[in-house]
Length: 295
Image (cartoon, rainbow, N blue to C red; front, side, top):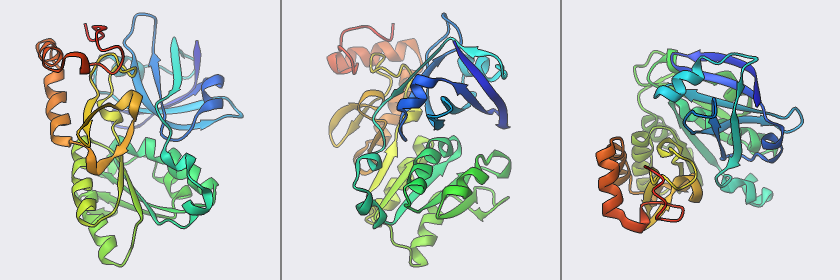
């Protein structure tokens, strides 16, 4: 059992928890995720890691209520425990393996949308601890849905907050702020965008025009987290990939976002899953290809 040390609601339907998971915390790296279960019969829920402390043995998760499983999770309090807390899973951010001197020479921009702020935070924090400063754009629909602003401000080189309705910070979409910063003379060597699929799509469309290499995290499309359900199958540069085992980070300019978003809609129903399994054959799953993991 994995004890919950702290639990709170950050804003409407978005929750923050600090979990005691010593073995997981010891091996965590930015960009990775965990799979949790509230009890032995509950669904597996993949969640990106928001923060971790290897000395204290804690892992922080942030999640939004999107279904029955996360609804149950939201009712857990400090002192309760998860039945399973598996990880770290997925490939770490590519920054982790880069030469530190080379990283310090780069102008890096992070773009976080909504709950995507949570997985952006550990990457920016890791860079900050290594002496690498990065600019960060955090976007939300309105001020009330903004999360982790103070935490991000403490580790970002420059933090730019924008709200769709103009209720706080800059007004407009995150893409508008990217355009504004570039127009003001900012030059970026790489951009990392994490948030809703539609946001990442349009960020990549803009950064491609601006010739800024862009990394995206496809954690929003993960379901099973092991490659066996076929939910996070995506085409990247013409090749079939699975976000949970091959990612979750990919070259955003090579991701077929339209196909991925259309596929996610089809996948939501039993009929849709059967259709995709028949259509995609052995490439439907990222595991064995014939396991029936979505049945």
